[in-house]
Length: 57
Image: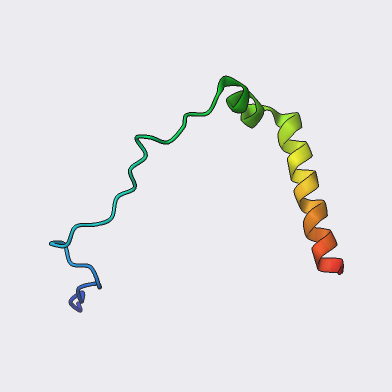
């Protein structure tokens, strides 16, 4: 087998980590909308219509 060459980042270098401790939590209303299938369907159709308009122009 061949040996793996080290990547640009070695194991000794600290890796960047995102600090999400101060990120806002979603509200109950936001979570309910995310789980709502009718709302997802409306967003899906609206997004696809935007894409179709971009392709046609």
